[in-house]
Length: 200
Image 1: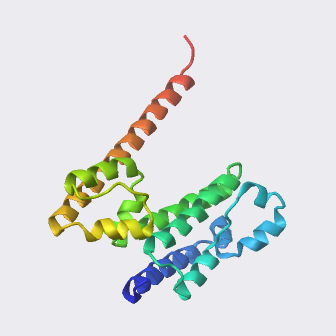
Image 2: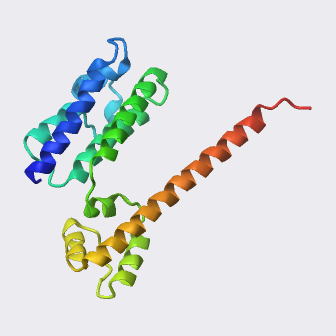
Image 3: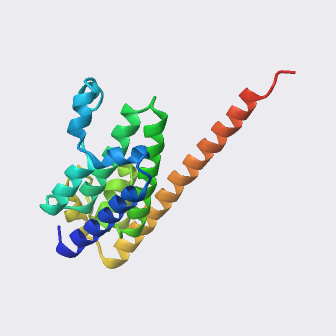
């Protein structure tokens, strides 16, 4: 990873650690500052439920050793910490609350970090539609598996104007995802209200 980008990630990551340390000692979020290995020793079923353990200490070490070739791999690990906690602690209200707090820190960091077009492609969650859009933007684009190398090739073949078109497409897809998520939440809220209404 390029040094300026690495420095940015290190800065944002350290800001998250500072925010965690500022929380009261009784806050369960402090568990995220500990090694997951200790947690695994105390919880014998952890490895049965979580297939890819990762913690903030591992992420910090990988950052220091510059083992993240692209920012998206850093963000992927961070999101995995959050997802693993949600999965394992689904019946632990205190840890779920701490996980939501960590997720809010993560979202704030991700929003402040300028994600490259390449990383946007990998995180859009709409690769089938993206292939069709690329073909419309640049007829010379060939549908292929989205490996790191293939994404580089696709982007190299796009003009500046075509890249702007692609960025606009990704922005629209992001808006669609937010809209769908909002509609699902509103629908669930309405359903919960109906189910809790007293029978007449």
